[in-house]
Length: 469
Image (tube, rainbow, N blue to C red; front, side, top):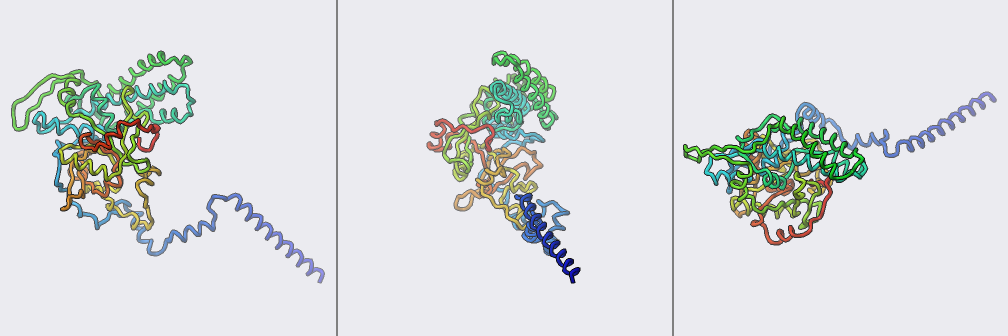
């Protein structure tokens, strides 16, 4: 009897100890896994994911195919044509190849129809290589100047971090084109042709970044912080940049001979120019006064903004924009096209792009039905979360209207070659324009006075790392 009582007491003690250890272990586990995913929570997550027998067919399809191909909305295929009521006839389609020069191609594509008309040509192309050379050279100078200006800041200061993270790039916007052509002029394509490194900029850009970072650190290392002495060193450094650019792209011509024939005419016209002379004769009369507009719902509308450090020439202005709703952009764009004026336009081109069909439509792909989850965000939310932003520039050259005169779709002249999209063009629905358009550059004459007045105000200065840079 005593023996049984002892055994019973041992069992009770062990049971109490086990319960204590379990409770203590749970307390420790709770303390350790705050914010982590417990096994119990994982079970809940699995149940919420609702992976059932019906999901197996979707798993089989998605794991063996492109998600994009499977999400293609068959109901939308073929519902939108590529016909337009109003179209500004462009010359031939251009091709930026594997480079970020869309801003430069687009800016020049806005001007090309005027050159074709002025000289009565079948076609005409500017040398993007020529302007790209000077764009890169000026951006290198801009970086080194900013290094000199921030030489007393700590290397971990956000401004210095931003500088060295992005010392140079091949991207840009419309407002970077006029300062370059005004200083260096322009030349026809045949005066400075494309090279492997202008069409494939990645490696050259990487080498330029490395060299500029090295030079920037050297400028910061000098004990003598006198700006005049540092600028003398900067000039020596730019000799290395010029050398890299010349070896990769060829040296820009100081003068050239342009030979051309007019449309339906066998007579050859030949004339010598400097790049500046050609600019003054062929381009300057048509540059005019342009205003960059943007639709950025994350910022206050009808305000004038400037993005700091966003330019290519140190001695030019940062690019600025007036923030207006997309429905306003559409009104100004329509007026411009009806007066045969193409526009610089930029957007989030990858969003819902059916590249094969050459169609930008919010209904092109139905990822929600395929995956059974919602991706819904409005334009403001997409901007604030970095989900969307301006990624590509194209020339806006046409529109198509309904019977009541409302725009239902727009025509974009792209720079991806004539085999991309629909014969080199993209058709954009008005709904897509509203959701994914960002920049539109319009001549002042097509804008109301209230917009022009805004451009006379002191702009709100945004930091170099702003989402819209």
